[in-house]
Length: 248
Image (spheres, rainbow, N blue to C red):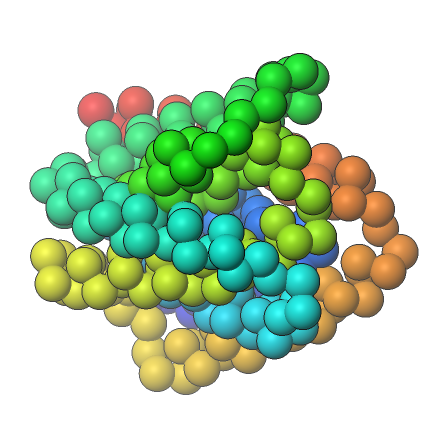
């Protein structure tokens, strides 16, 4: 892989890790479209899955006291099933359609977030939790974006921001590991061809992004952080969608 591409990947993972620490989610939604453009749909999503696991694993100890383990135990089993289904579908799709799916999923997530903020609807019970977990796992494997489904559930269930953001971190670790395991079984040749030093640098840059995010969190409101993530994700999603359509 060219050195310029490696530096682009490192820059994106830093920005994604900052967003993940500040807003609780956003790493995948922000980074996925750009990495898909840079590396191709399969390798881009594979790398997003790996980086998402690393960033969330780093954050888990920092938010441990706020994690809602009851909610985690409900969401996670269904997300694993969704991850298996999504990975099997992703392995059978060529680059262009998968790129279109990535862009479409992110755009749909952005639209859904804007609608749900104004919605006066409340959901309860176990079925919505199961559906959110399954959809999150499936979209994580397909597009590298697992946050929108559980984010939509959080808004409709009136799940408070602090335990929601904390619970997502171990949830993303487990869901991401399930997606990665399935992809190693189904499309192992799609692992990005980064040199060993670049993999180490990715981990170090994610750690640095998390530390920067902790400082940014003290001076930037959740509202402004989410707005930044949404704007960047919108640009990346449109670009990935157009790129996929042109490739077709």
